Length: 240
Image (cartoon, rainbow, N blue to C red):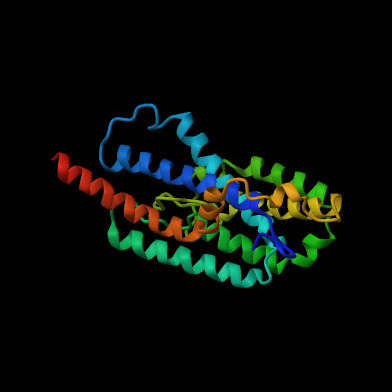
């Protein structure tokens, strides 16, 4: 979807490809440490783990928001993300290797894309620069909201989990939709500052392996965890 006329914006694919590799390495480290008991004190419960996780998910959300400017049908995008999120929830619930994923990052992308599509007329009337700053401020201000428990049920999707709620991957609307919207406004601001379009250097595919991986980010996301589990099971079987 990241294309302009006949020239695909390769830079977005490259960034996405680098980030998806980082995500696979992060989940491999997480599985090794928390599921299979490998010793990783540098990772478990550290600031590094939190920073690494944020460097992946925030980039994905910002880029997904930016892609609203390229999509021909954001309602369709939302449906695709939603179907993928449902598949992840079903698979992780059945496999029961770790805590099932409820309202994970694919849910957040689905919900955010749907919200962006519905309120597009409002977003188009906002000042891109002011809205970009406002959404980033809202994101920072509400970042801690889902880290607490609330005496309500049924609002975990919004960012208000009750004490009984748990998820192996949790990205509710608050605060993460604000990062998505920041990406959407970033695309509008770029278009306003550069009406002639994206420069050639952003279209140049200087890292074809990364760009190829970036174009396959959704299937890689869906397949990498099962493959990691198979790999670790094989390692445990061989090493005893």
